[in-house]
Amino acid sequence: MFYKLIQRIRKWFADRKERRIEKLTARANQLPDGKAIDLLELQQKGLVRAKATGQSIEVIHAQVESLVRKRLLVLVSPGTYFVSSGSHQNMVTKRPHTFTLYPLDTTHFSVGAACINANLPIPGEKDMFYGVRKVSDDLVRFLEAAQGEDSMTVQAGVWAITDGFSAYQLQHHLYFADRYGNNRRQAIGNDNIAKAKQILQKLSIRTNL
Image (cartoon, rainbow, N blue to C red; front, side, top):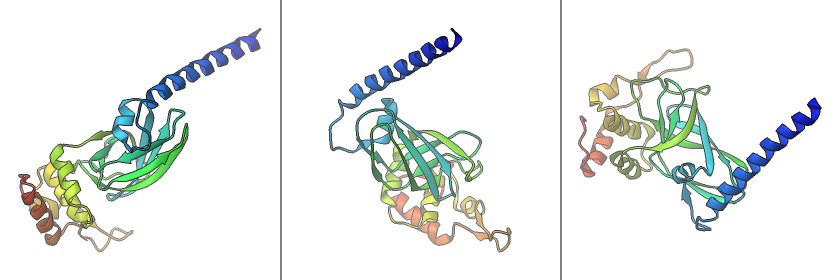
């Protein structure tokens, strides 16, 4: 009797999961075929589940899971940020990334990113992110205009927008060092700040630089 009860419970959960997949797949079938759909839109429609782990101040390792029986072409656009699950910084993607997500499958990828909360710790490999959101329009415009620039130039512009950092604060906030903590040097130099300022001024984005 107990075994049959367990079987019925398992079947109920399986049927419920199947009904959910069918419902979401019907929603996904309304999307245009062959067109890249923004990851944020897919998440908002409940069609995918996104999470990530931090790798460094420059890279994030993402994982996107399909919840539907439809192949999706997914776009991770600049300005998409992965939401921190703890006290570490959120991380925003710097460049567009497109990939195919197969039905009920999971895709893993690494993408260039920048931190957007200067006064919080930089994420490490054990720090998790769940879900995605979008940064401000000004920050999206800066990221798009800074394509191909040095990562520290991008980071300077990002913190100037998100945290209101001045040139002095940028220079004294982040340092590189060897694995023993020695040979510390400023990560963001004068050239990075000058280039970030030039891009921001061209876009008419007011900051403290």
